[in-house]
Structure formats: C-alpha cells, structure tokens
Length: 86
Image (cartoon, rainbow, N blue to C red):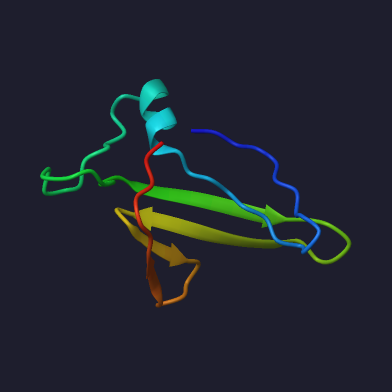
C-alpha cells in the first residue's frame, strides 16, 4: 500500500511508524477495531518488508503485525505493542 526510504540515525538505528489511522483515511477497509469489536485495536494483518543496503551485503527481513502482536522475520518470539492513537 506504500513504500518509502528510511535512513539510520547517528546510532545506526531507524524507526518505521505504522499509522493505521492515516492508512484508514486512504483505505477505509483497514480495521481500527480489535477482532472482538469491543475496544480500539488492530485486527488486520500487516506485513512490512525491509531491505537494508549500504556498504555491506544487502539484508532483508519482514515484520508482521497481527493486532498488537509483532512477529520479526522467522523468529518464534512474539512482541506485544500498545496501541497508540494520535
């Protein structure tokens, strides 16, 4: 649904922000309600594909969002993030 370029900061880290509210304005079918429909939350599965290029061999990875769960590449570990609404 979109693409862009992200540059690392001085500490060689970068931030990618997924703004479901902004995406919902463009694509109204993007859900802003949890599966149960009783509270704010995300229900859609979102895949963010990353490609890092630079002085070294290019590297790629995928971040998958399902609700408030975050899956990093093929790692089994799951992170839970709070929903932040602006």
